[in-house]
Length: 271
Image (cartoon, rainbow, N blue to C red):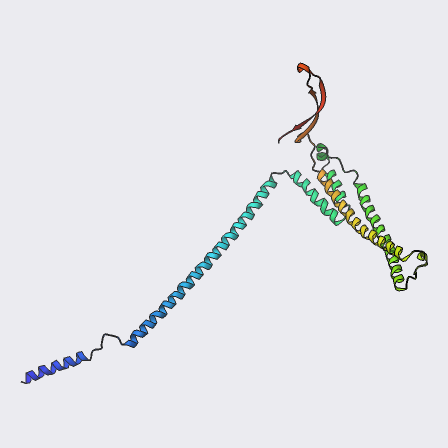
């Protein structure tokens, strides 16, 4: 009996221990917390993916810009190399002569007449080469320079004369308009008011024209220096692409017989 009691007591203790074991099914609150945590993880992952895509796009754009920049730089370098090769094909003498044109024009722009003097100096520096090519020496440079400055002086005197009389007649007209036709200068008392206005306009027009003529003389100075510098590299040697020479041409006649007539032969040479 005592043994049976102990067995029952042990069974009840075991049953109580099993009853006190925690339920394996989580409560509703724990399920909600887990679901909320999973949603946050998904949003975080989506943000990370979006940020990674944006960074990848920016990196791709930066890479394309760098590639375009490198391409332009390469094209510029290729153009410079091509130009350098092109210039290398020219002989040093031709390059030096071509530079004369730029220098002559630049000097004429800075100081009228300077380009003409520079052209004459360059011809004398290359006297043998110029004579071989048949380039005539710019012998009239000493005449062109005074002519240029003579033009400037003439235009300046023209401007001063017309400007002075323009202001004289301007004052005369203004005085007559303000004083009911009364003359200001007794030298012009016999000139009518309308005629005085026409004279004023004439002197103003001539004064403005003298300004245009001044610019024209300056432009002619630059053009003349440019043309003379171009003649320094004008080649009239025997190996020109076009040759003009006299010749005798057979003229048509009866039954193939004809006479010989003088003519001119043009020969084109491809070099």
